[in-house]
Image (tube, rainbow, N blue to C red; front, side, top):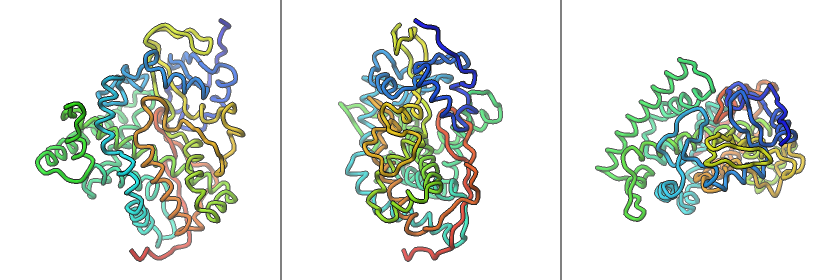
Length: 401
C-alpha cells in the first residue's frame, strides 16, 4: 500500500481543531487520504460519505460497544452498545418517540416557540444562542422527560458542562465541572424516577419506566443513562443547528426571502441546515478484527472516527457542497448518522427546527446579527457549534396567547 500523506494541521480529538471551521482539512482528507491515520490522536479518520455510511452499517466489523468516544471509556447507554443489547434497549426507548407521539406535538411546539420569542421580543435584542436556540430543545426535552420548569437552567448547565469537557485535553477545571454536572443530573434524575414509579404521569420518564420488550424493562441505572442521552442528544445538537442555520440565513438574505415567500420550503431548508452544521462532529467505532478500508490496513482494536461534517460536504454526493442552498433536493445527509444507530429523535428535531423558523420569520422579520464576523465555536471534539450570537430586531408586542 502507498505511504499515507500527513497533514500536521489535523488532530481529530482536539477541541481546538473542531472549535473553528475545519473544512479545508476535511477536504484535504477526502482528496488525499479518505481513510486517514491521524498520528496526533492515534485514530483513523473516515472522511468520505461512502466510507462513513459503510462503516456505520457494518457493526460486526466496526462496533460501538467499545465506546463512541475515542478517548473515554464506554458508558452503559444504548449509543455505546451493539446488538442484541442495543436493539433491545432501542426498542424500549423508542416507545417515547413514536411517529404519532411526535406528530401530535406541532401545536405544543408552536406555543413554546411563541413563549420563547415573547421572552425577548419587546427588548429588540438578545443572545440568539442562549435566549432562543438553546431554549427550544431544552424546554421540549425537559417537558418530555417530565422535569419541572424551574430546573431548566440546571439542565442547560449540566448538559453544557458535560460536553464542554470533551476537548481532547485534561483541563482540571472543565473535568471538575463535568463531574459535578454528572453527579447533579444523576441525583436529580434518580429523584424523578422514584417519583414516577410511585406516581406515573404522561411523560417520557414514565414511559421508559413502564416500557417492556420480551418481558424486559430498563433498570434504574439504565433509566438514568438513557435520560442523560436523551437530554444531551436532544438539547445540544438541535441548538447548534438552529444557531448555525440562522447564521446562514443572515449571510444569505435572498435565501431567507425564499422562505418568507414560500414557507412550505422551510422543511427543505431544515435539511440543508442539518447537512451544513452537522452538530455531531464524529462518532467512534472500534475494529473487531484486522480489515482493509479504502486501501488502508486497519488493525483489530483500532479506533475509527466517522467524520459527519466531511461526509456531508462530499462532492461525489452533494453538488456544490460548499454552497448553502435552502432548495437542495435530494439531500441525503448523514447528520443523524446511519445504520443501526440512526438517531431516534430525528423526527422530533426536524419538527422543532421547522416550527421555530416558521415563527421567527413571521414574528421577527428583521432579525440580524450585531456583527458580521462569524461567531466563535465551542472548542469541543464531539458536539460543537456557536457559543454566542448577539442579535437585534425591531421590538414587537408579545403574542396574544
